[in-house]
Length: 258
Image 1 (cartoon, helix red, strand yellow):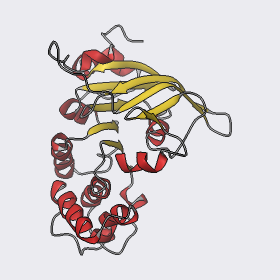
Image 2 (image 1 turned 120 degrees about the vertical axis):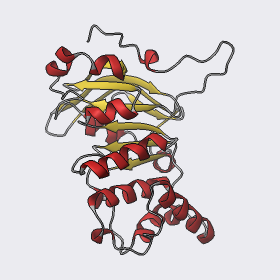
Image 3 (image 1 turned 135 degrees about the horizontal axis):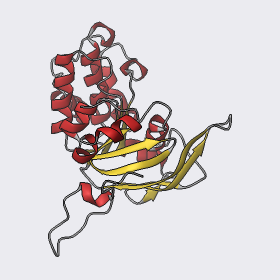
Image 4 (image 1 turned 45 degrees about the vertical axis):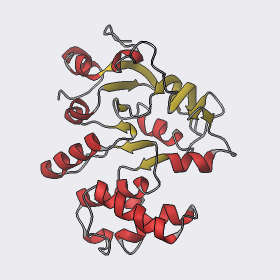
């Protein structure tokens, strides 16, 4: 554990006296996970995320970041520990509702863009939730507008740039009206202009976020709170600025300076 103040509460301004405290949108309770080959990926993770809070998840390759993200909407489920969304554990009875509330965006947008048009990809989730056609159209229009892709409805996803596909991938989860976004390496592979555009988008979205990234500049620019995973454990959970200012700790965990 770092010598810095690593209290999770220190990353978020305390509520004024007497104010109601919203329950966490996400809670991990002693979450552990091992893959079928015996590889231990997560070792007793415990944390909470408040509604609207933005958290950067960092650490070297193999630290468990992607494994953690896949637990947030039930892609992976462990019998050891618990993941709670809005206070409810993810299980067979809740997983469908959880996947509407937690929008998962993979590192490669081609993993979730498979339809013949941008419109069809963004409409896919609401349609399969049984949303009526007029509301689907409204959701698609709203989601594409949020990510700056209005007017691309009839474009073929594989005919647009990587940065544009990443924005459409985010729109596919925004159309589900999620409360929490889980993004895996969203800035990977982007040129500087597309990266700046993505940073601006993430700043403006109101949802709570857990974003796995090696992009320390993005962590500094967007995320007030940072969690460092190291060998499947939380090595630091607290304010982003003091952690990124500690060059010795960045070197220790194999992270680039912002």
